[in-house]
Image 1 (cartoon, rainbow over the protein chains, first blue to last red):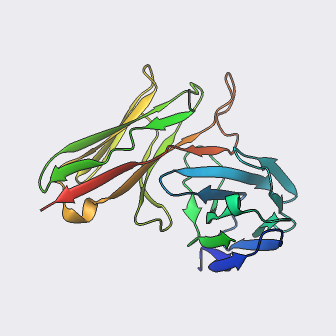
Image 2: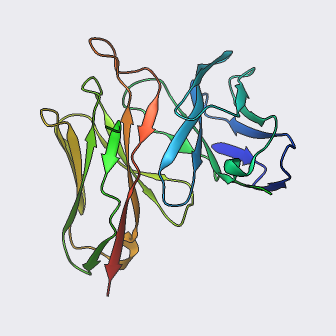
Length: 113
Length: 116
C-alpha cells in the first residue's frame, strides 16, 4: 500500500500560470481533502470531497478548483497562480465514519513568484 | 470565535516534565476528535483519537470535556523527541444530526520544545 501520494513534491510557478496538483490514494477511502499550510498557521481546508463526483468548499476555496472523477484521485487546480498561493499543500483521505482519522500525503511545496 | 482554537505557545519544558495543551471548539455537535503531531512542516501524523471521555496511550492522555467544549492532551515524562507541533482536529457537526459532514477543521497548533 502506497497510502496517499501527492505529485509533484515541489513546484515553482510564475504569477498567472496554471497547474494541477494530483492526489492519489489506494485505500478505497470515500473522503478526500486538500489543505494548505502557511508559516505559523495550522492547516486550512481548501476543498474536500465525500465521494466520487462530489466536491465541496472548505474554509479558503477562492482561487482553487477541484475534481473527483475517480474515487482514488482528487485533483487541485490553480487557474491563475498568485503569490498569496505560495504554501505547502497537503492532501488527505479517510474512510467514512466519525472515528476515522485522516491519512496524509507528503505535501507539495509550491512557490509562486 | 474560531471553530477550533489552540494556544500556539511555544511551550518550553525540561525533559521529564509533564505538559498539557487545550483545544477549544465551538460546534457542540462534534462527536469525535483527533490529536496529530507535526514535525518541521512535514505531513501531520495521527497521535490519538478521542471518542468518549478520554483515551490513554503510554505517556499520552487525551481527555474530552463536552460540557465546556474542549479537549486536552497531557504528555508525561517529556522526551526531547516530543518536540513538535501538536494539532487538534475537530469534525464539523450538524446540530441535531449526524456529526459526519465530512469536514474536518484544524486548530492552529501548539508548539512544544523539550529542553535537555
